[in-house]
Each structure stands twice: as structure tokens, then as C-alpha cells.
Length: 202
Length: 102
Image (tube, rainbow over all chains, first blue to last red; front, side, top):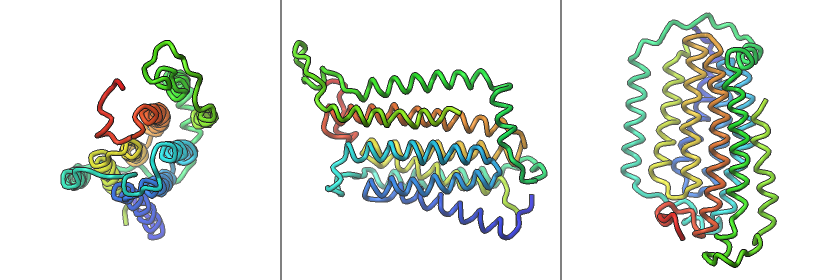
């Protein structure tokens, strides 16, 4: 499949956005910077999906990852880290080993990608793929589709149950004294936690 | 000029490597989750690229959608666990929170 020059420029720009974001996630000292760099990666990968004319997957990527998972991660960062102490918020360990893993993985993946003869590319006419994906989801893949909806319900109930806070933890080991839920405003955040799940399901 | 399968595979390989690096080196549990999200994104990018450039069918895209849904469910439950961890230990440093019991 031949790509025009403009197409190649767009591809390399999107790939550079995704890769730069990923590198920043890996190397940033401040965890809030990591979270926002993750945003750049998600946008870059969504653009690559659109470049592959996988329009539905690109939109779902933006909705679920940027609108849901990234917000959740930011909430978790703000709720759990001592943001003001930047140095402790994102300490790293084993830098040499990590670098070894990084370079080894890139080397192996690049060698495999360049040496294996991948199949002949089908004729590339940009066409909307969403109707085909929808037909497939409600045709041959209808059973996994329904099972996934049950999984989402289970994840929703599990997340609410886990994040609600058990009385034993609040009372720190005194079994009889069932203290009331210490922080009621956390429940509102659990409510917001539900919404990305709701968006996933078409 | 041809943008083929190897281009996408190399991009996704770099994403995978950065995710692995994040998982290996970070001590903050939330940062480790970010690395896992990077790895999942790399895998899903591979699925979509193969679906478009090798088979030409929509099966890979359907699989990618399922992967995104699973990633969302995983992130929600894992972050709820991280919140509980913070509530119990006042820390999300994975080298400090080494006990199941308080």
C-alpha cells in the first residue's frame, strides 16, 4: 500500500506524539506530568487508529481512555499522593535494570517487525468501518458482547464495594466498634467512578 | 512511500517498552497502572494494524473494542484497590505496602 507524502507526514507526526508521550510517562519525575503525558499518548494512538481507518475504535479510545481512565488516574493521583512533595510522589528504583528491559524490548520487537514477511496488504481504500464492526458485534460476536456487559456490571459493583471503605479498616482492628463511614464525600467520587463504565457499553 | 505493518509494530513496540520500563522502575502503584495502560494500548494498536493491513476484516477491530472495555474494567477495580491501600497504609509505595494485614 503506497501512502502519499502528506499521509506519511501525518503518520510520523501521530507516531511521534504517541512515542514522546510514552517516553515522558516513563521518565518524568513528577507523577502529574506522567498523567498528562499519558493524555498525549492516548491522543496519538487514537490518531493512528483513525489513520488505519478504524474510526469506531478511535472514537471509543477517546471516550473511554481520555474521558474515563485518564480522569480516574488523575483522581487516584490527587487522592493518594502528597502532590506538594514532588520528589516523593514518583520515586523510581532499579533504573539500570529498567533501561535494560526498555532497550531489549525495543530491539526484539524491531527485529521481529522488520524480519518477518507480513502478509500482502489488501487494497487500501479509506472506507467507514463502523457499520461492519456493528454488524460483527451483533452477529458472530454477540455472545462475547453480552458477557462483556456482565463483566462491566461486576466491575462496577466491585469498584463501588471496594472503594466504599469497610468499617474494619476505619476502626483499625476493633471488631465490635463499627465506626460510621468516616468520609462521606468519598462516596460522591465513587459515583463519578461509575460513569466511564457506563460509556463503554454501546 | 509505504506505511506498512512494520511501522505500526515498531511504534507499538516502543509503547510496550516504555510501559514495561514504567512497571519495572516505578514504586508508586498509580504509576505502575499507567505503565499497564501503555502496554494495553500497544497490544490494541497491534490488533487494529493487523486487522487493517493483513487480514482486511473487522475481527481485529472487534477484538480491540473488547480489549478497551477490559482495560476500563481493570483500571476501575485496580484504582479502587489503590484507594483502599492508601486508606490502610497512608502510602501507595509498593515497597512499603508488603502486608495483606494491617
